[in-house]
Image (cartoon, rainbow, N blue to C red):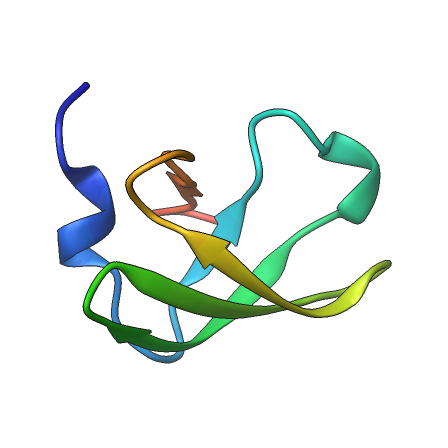
Length: 60
C-alpha cells in the first residue's frame, strides 16, 4: 500500500473506500497517521491511516 494518506491536509475532500454510503468527507486533521474526517452522511470519524487508505477527491 502506498502512503497516499500522508498528503491529506485539513480542508481536502475524501471518500472511504469501504464505506461509499458515508459520502464525501472533509479532512479535519491528519496527525501521526490518525485522520479525522467529517463525512456528510456519517459525521466525524477518526480513521487509522495505517489500515485504511482514503481516496482523495482532486476534482470534486
